[in-house]
Amino acid sequence: MPLDGFRCFMIVVLGSINLDIRLEVDSLPLAGETIHAHNRQYFGGGKGANQALAAKRAGGDVSFFGAVGSDTLAERALAELVEADVPILDIAVVREETGSANIYVDRHGENCIVITAGANGLVDVDMAAAAVASASASAKRGLLVFQQEIPFETNKAALELARLHGVRTILNVSPFDVTSAELSRLADIIIANQHEWAKLSNGADDPDAMREWSGRNDQTLVVTRGAGGVVVSTPMEYFEVAAPVIQPIDTVGAGDTFCGYFAAELDCGRSLKEAAGIAVVAASVACLRAGAQPSIPLRFDVLGLLAKNKFA
Ligand code: RIB
Image (cartoon, rainbow, N blue to C red; front, side, top):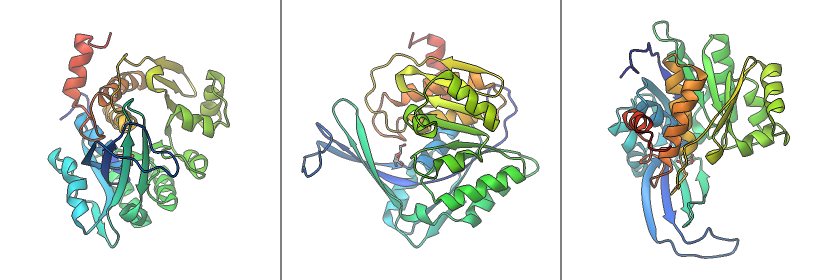
């Protein structure tokens, strides 16, 4: 579905697929503690899959490259993607279990997540090359989107190839690790939350540090700050976008919703400011429901809420 007459191309996501096991608890477990969960739910998850689904629900044309195991977890992990018509033809079935995430959410909506890479650890350089080829196919020069739940070597190869072929890239440096700084030098656009940006910048948290980074690396830097909105810096401009005031229930997947929406809007030729403006509302809506994938809103609903000024 093209966005309001804009010419859209294609968003290609290379990334992880998990089965999310969501456990509602009173408080997050401490070291050595055994606690009861009130509720256990299974959802599709993984930052790659979530971002692909968000881009699709935002109205984008999406391709998704990743891997699952040949096991019973895979079908559940892919269910929301299949239902949303995200093509799963480019998802490899490998000799490892489907990746999973144990997600604990407490009564304040705070969470902690433990992931097991499984099949995601076998997303290899051949898949990276296929993803870049898909994004650089002549009729549709797309936008390539990455996160950090697949091997570093795969992401690095894809980012380098994308640069060679002139494909625009977005790297979400999440989950942040020791390789994030090296990878981030290869992307055109970096999306980080405020904690990840603090690690990238060695603690510098001011507009000058962001401007300096963008200028030095010729990159667009997008820092999400939860209730504090979003800050965007490029070599030419710097601006902030406020977030709607909400009472969050579950923030899992909000960052992925932001990334998917942001990519879809940019892919259709919207400005950085417009893309950040819609993505921040979509991410806020995603905090109002439980689970990562079930909470990703449709673009129609995001625009409806914006029009009704429901968050003002
Ligand atoms: O960003 C949220 C995601 O992180 C969850 O879906 C979980 O699978 C982990 O990858």
